[in-house]
Length: 192
Image (cartoon, rainbow, N blue to C red; front, top):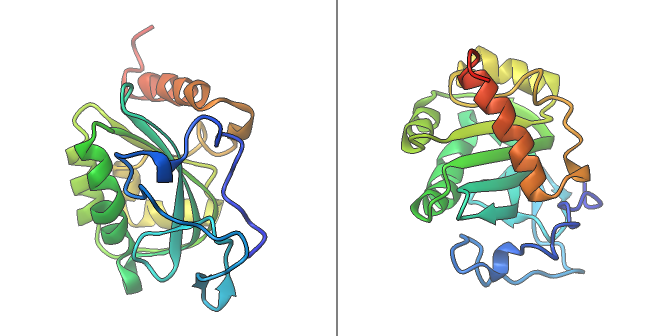
């Protein structure tokens, strides 16, 4: 797992540790010292800690004018034992919402498992967004099934439109526009 780096091709456009509105503003990173692990497996030092023992993230891009954020994730999303959604919601999502973000793109290729608890934080997150949304891209099928069995699909959009998106080929703005169009069709199926 220590070889899996957060996506870095957009660093010329955005770096969360240099963004005054980011929860990771002024975060210092090591290229050689591995300090975080998921179940005794070291992870790359560029991943950001959210307070969870098993889930780490990287904010790849935030656009406060258009109100969206792209977050890559790694690890085990475990609400049952570690209440990961609480850490994500309180430590990351709320500061972003306070700065105008109401659309979240979560990239889950490296999320290895999901263990549910209740859906209260998901409901709260969804209700905080007003005209926004939460989209899960490229999560593994068995993780999606766990989301569905926990009824989290009511709050987070995932599925056929978002399962196999080759997001790395886009700029952040282009990816956002692709997702925005898909969400617009999903939310307003009888419009244009």
